[in-house]
Length: 297
Image (cartoon, rainbow, N blue to C red):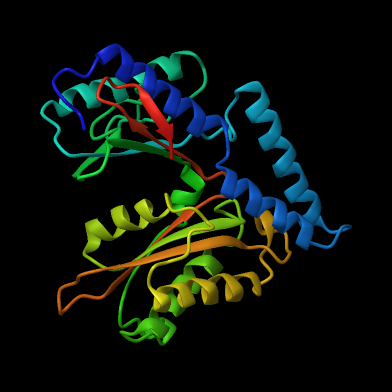
């Protein structure tokens, strides 16, 4: 857990290393899914060629320590700890790491003042970065995700019932909403994508929970048999749409879907879909009491 004695230098070094890895190295489960998708496409197809270029680019990025995608996105940070007596120390480390990596050219200038239209130049601005703290009895962990603008633009939220989709307040209605989001995205979210989905919640919590689902490994089976089945159905039906990599056609439109459910108001039934591009950039670490990385998660 975090304590007053946590060394700020160690913490800064750990957060910087975490962000650099998230930005430059695809998670192994995502890389494996892309490789399987490449093997499953017809060898003379545009889809196969596109996935081949994606894999080649990812390999070069990891080798050179360069961003997986030129759009290095907006950082989302999740911190879990038993006690956080000085949250400002964590926030300070995150902000300093962002500035350092931006100045080094690893992160693109992706924070614009919504009123003036002026770029802040350091990826720091009002409510940016987003840092979320939550309690846990386990060891302290920090996770970071860089989510690009294209995938954020095609993310969506639905309110059931939805007459337009003939979708009712049930899991079949949820399925229709999710597939509609995939269809509307086409290739604009840089397919093949990964979906984080929250059933229920409210307007605000739905998106946060949906994004948090993107931290789940693709090879991690849902604890709920019902939701696991829904995830399988979504991936199967989405991949039958023929949208394919980058929207150019093919068998692989989604690499995976991670779905959870949250309590909802009786009058509300939201389905929130957070779309992540193939360049799903996430990483997480466990920290020891001195702020050093105890292990990668």
